[in-house]
Length: 171
Image 1 (cartoon, rainbow, N blue to C red):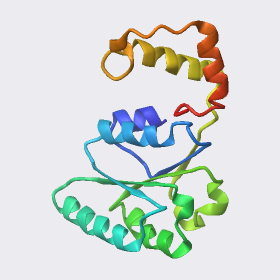
Image 2 (image 1 turned 30 degrees about the vertical axis):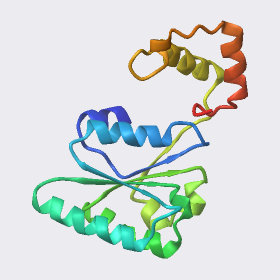
Image 3 (image 1 turned 180 degrees about the vertical axis):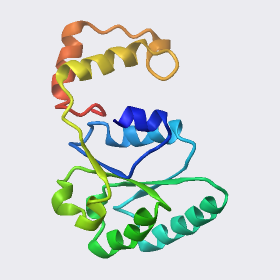
Image 4 (image 1 turned 90 degrees about the vertical axis):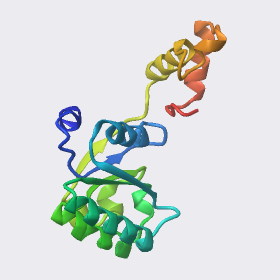
């Protein structure tokens, strides 16, 4: 569903729910790169209604120009009810497509009116096999990884690193 929505540039409002390091923010950045919409990002830890109001004004200007606005809010569970309420009318009207990321159950941490207008995608903890693949790709990648330094790593070491990462690709 998500892949088709990205390909068609028809992104619904959504919430990515999963453990740290499972790819929530990465998915949001993939959407940002693949869509023609204006992509704005906030961290719920360090932002509030004033920041949201500035983005709403920009989204209104974008709308006049025929452009969509996607707002990604990382750690949405940190926003209080009043902050989430301020976002609701923009999502309802389609002025802003909302993407939230949270490690907490959105059924308890996101207001029900906002939650009812979003698709929730549950991300799982990454397996050791998946993390091993990420490590191998990073070692081989000459443009964005470690491939330029011709690093060699034996399978047991990769396995140990994958195990120690405890499901978090960033580790």
